[in-house]
Image 1 (cartoon, rainbow over the protein chains, first blue to last red):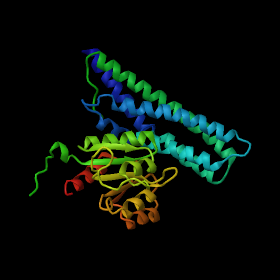
Image 2: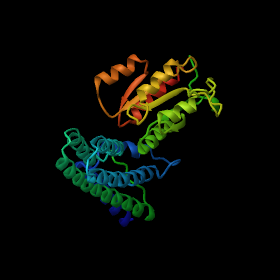
Image 3: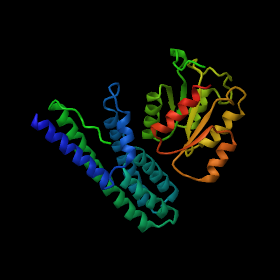
Image 4: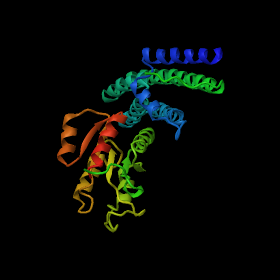
Length: 152
Length: 144
C-alpha cells in the first residue's frame, strides 16, 4: 500500500530529525522500548503527563518570578522538577535550558532567570508540538493499517 | 542451581518512592517490565507509613496489605524527608534493615553517592533510569 509506506517513510525521517536536531535523546527510545501489547499507549501516557506537569511548572515559575521578593529556592525547586521530568522523557533541549536556569537561580540573577523562563517555555512548546505531530503520524499509519517502524 | 521462574507469590515486590510523577510512572513501568510487583509512594513519609515505620505503628515486615517488600527504590531529592533520611530509617529498623535500598538521583555528586553507599544503600543509580539499570537490579533480586 503506497500510502502506508509513504507515511512510514515520513515517520522515520521525522523521528530521525528530532534526534539529529537534539529535541529528543536516547531516553525517548527507552520509553518506546517499554511500550508493548500489554501497554500500547505507554509513550503517549507518559508524554501527556509530562505536558500537564510542565504547564503547571511553567505557571508556577512565572508566578514565583513575579513576586516582589523572589524566593530563588522555590524557583530552583520548580526548575529541578522540570529538569527531572524532561530528562526522563528525553526532551533534551528542555533539560539543557533547565541546567542553565538552575545556575541563574544559584546566582540569584533575576534577569537571567526571566530569560531562562522564556527559553524553557519556547523549547517546551517546540518539543510539545513535535511530539504531537509524531503521535499524529503514528495514528495515521495505524489507521491506514500499517505498523509503526522501529527506530534503532 | 536455583530455578529462575517465580510462583505468583515469589514475584519480587518493590516499593518505589519518588516525588516526581513522571519518574514514578517510569520507574513503575521499568520494574513491571522486569517482572516485579510495584507499589509507589510520592514521598518518604508515605513510604514510611507503608513500611510500618512511623511512630506508634506496629513494626512487622508485613505492611497493611500483608505483602512483604523485597526492595525499596527511592529518589534522593524529595521535599520533607530525603531519600537518604529514608535509607537511614530503614537501616535503623530491626525488621527492615536487610531489605535492599536503591537510591536514584539526577545529580552525580561523589560525596552524596559515597554517603549513601556507606549508609548501606545497595546501589546508587543516576537518573534518568534505564531498562538496563533495572534489569541489573532484578538479576540481583533473584539471588535473595
